[in-house]
Image (cartoon, rainbow, N blue to C red; front, top):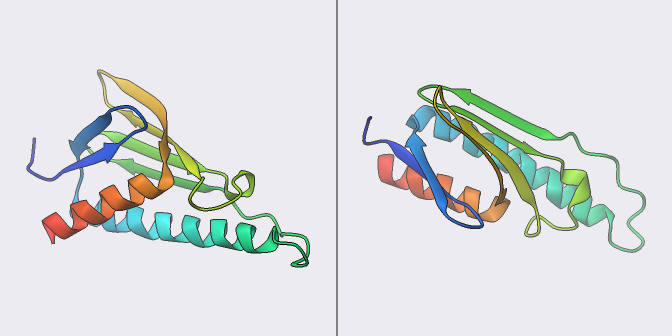
Length: 117
């Protein structure tokens, strides 16, 4: 296993797996787009802002030593800070599916990118 392990902190516990810096940059782009969608939904739910146009769900998939999938429907969360994502990490031996707080995942990816450069 390489030294490039991404650790994602979950509501209870964490999961760590081999992840390339390039994949982390792609994940960061997907998370940034999700955050923008969540902000658009939150802005439209304020009184007088009109009806929100539905935002597309975010689906990110990575296949390497492990398979990583992240899914979030931005239309069901009142603010970006309340949003949770559905996270699946699996390989040939194990499959983990759980919810994670979006803001924690963003922090974890940013920390990983700072460490790997």
